Image 1 (cartoon, rainbow, N blue to C red):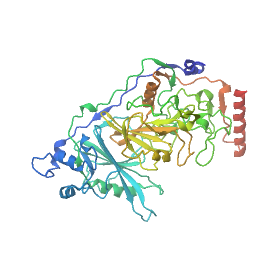
Image 2: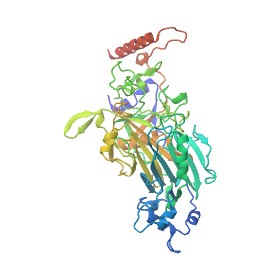
Image 3: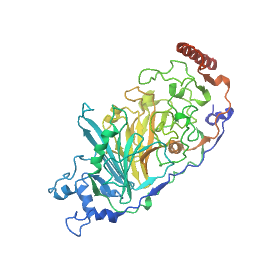
Length: 540
């Protein structure tokens, strides 16, 4: 079958392929920095009256905070100003507070980001020390998003005197302390949970952050023009149309998979010009909620992938799944499906329900050779690459790998999940490592708590700075745009949902009326029989 016929096969079932809608650039607002007010707080720091205090600070702290002078906003960090003035000649870090040196520091045209690792001692509620991270960012510009869902404003609890304009907001599992100083929005955040004794509680985290906030001082930065910080337009789309690539619009999730039946996030924004995160095509953007990468038509027991607790992946009970709506064993690569905002228990402010899947699941199609000299291939050989030049934010043994991009008009955190952390450790991808666009940073795997904890796929998500701090956004159209460039052709958007599907292509799982007294065991038997019958009917 020709590729062009595959791309629009859905025409037989009532769907329409058409040229895609235009991509949208992100809307951003630049910061107006009051450097006069910042300089006024630095009086007396220089060794002589005619010394530029900012230049003095950048020189004095640059050995601990690399490239700090590149920040176009005043850099606030836990920093002992008096100790800086009193430090001995040649002393490099005598001005640090008890929070120590940051595990991650990045300054550039978009502002700055830093992360500090802190060990909490034993307490009445904790039998052993616990390492936590506190993050701080200063934003040169903010991304303007639609109104968020969820999130809860919290009382400041003792910080009103020092931070009169501060907002304390709990959103997406982070407590954010947001305040404006010198015209700049600063975000100090910590991951914490309410009502979960196994993880750091927000009540326990608050004293740590409060102490952190009270040690902040200007450590550097340089006044510079922010005119160049306008959001970049999406890169030019290929002139010719692809004969194979098609995709459903953003927000069009598989029926019944959306979180709390509130739908997906209909957002055509391309947030950054990126390279596609998988090294090679073809690839699939699709749901991981079903057996065999979405194949509800497969024979029972056909999947070798199991969930964390050993149960095989299965179709959701009571669903009617159309073969034309599902990939066939992972090989039907198109059309793509948005899976941001699928049903999950995670907080996601840009999802209509306030909950959902935090990013996009990507699946390489087929198998990749392990090397040029070896004809053995497997799904675990597919390479993952950096989508943008940036700096790695990651601790040893950590499952997630984050690449932070800080460039004119681009301030994004790109997160990769499910790669094997031992392999990522062995390759040396830790905080501070600079990566180039297209550089190989790992391989697709199935790690989620343990090897084999999920199916083989790559989870990819994006965060951008907003008035509410770092917020998850839908990366779907950003990925569509990058995939078009990888293929060298424009995708075709499917504008209408499937309206007619042959009965023979529908797999029905048994649903028993509420008044039925049928035992649960019999329901499972009936479901098994119907699935087997439907499978053999199509493949006889």
